Length: 477
Image 1 (spheres, rainbow, N blue to C red):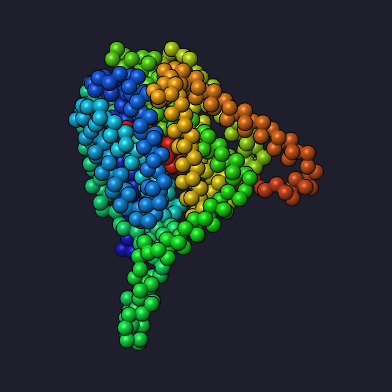
Image 2: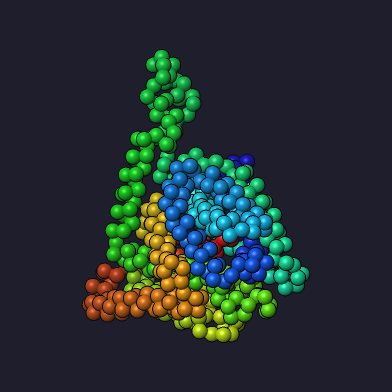
């Protein structure tokens, strides 16, 4: 019974929630649905609706990140499930542009609360179960996303289901996810905001009887995580974690690539459906978005999984690897922007996504390898915030009608140039690091250079690191 209650029950429930919350058959067909049955022009979708999601996401990310820990995760997971239901109610039945504008803010709440899904499990299970639980939770999410994309493609291609009915099916699946979230156990404390003391009731009663009244110990033990003293303590802990996280030059470099590359990846991911629709309009051609997303998810997961079995001295070759794979990503984005062949565009997207998931997995591991759980969580939040800030700047300048308002092809050429800049930056730094390393004497190199580090070295031979936490974000779905 203890085995079930300690970790299996919350892990099973959270995995089920992750599967159903990410099983969205309608997601790969958002753009065809908006420009088709919803009768919204491609320009409005590109230059007006989608940018609102980016701005809203940036606005709510920091408050949600703090509330996630303060409210102990579960309320935010329930909130995410509720907003997912509202999201598809609006997609199914909303017709006005105002309602669809609110839809973008609604989905910003969904994406900002994903941090609660990945943090919750560590607050309700023993540390010795982290390894297996992480694998189950991450696998459930990826399986749900791939299954949903495949189901959507089958419904569209084989069953000739309308986009509206695919969205209603997705609404039903999101309702199941919301119901599951209600049954999750409530954590006793967060990562930063914790109760001051955990004292048994019997001990409190004994102390109270001995002193004949209410004691400071009882007041301290029964105080909530929201009192001012505990908030100050938590703030100091965050500040110490922040200094530890960014005290190393190498950690700063990995974090810099994380922020720069994730901003570009987010733009490509959010607008790739518009590119596909531009090359082959969904009104006159067969649409294979669901199949492509399913394949890309599996290929990306395989790329992330392979990181655990690669032995590389990342301190020496890491920056050069970031530069090389960023160059591959830049080439893929240029291919997507310049080709008129939909299959070449699909292939470019698959390679781009796989290279990103591979590198973000390496990056997250290299950052986490020398940090505590608290420091890593804070680093994850800060890097995500800076990535989103850069993405917002790109959106405001390149996409928004109030600035350049570029068409979709020109946008992808800009994103290709953006990734090329990242590539050059890290290629130059990587070559400098390699030259500097090999100019050292053998004895100095052996003394100064850390040993080859792999996921197996850090977590044990049975540890499975499953890659980036949040890579499937699509505006309004």
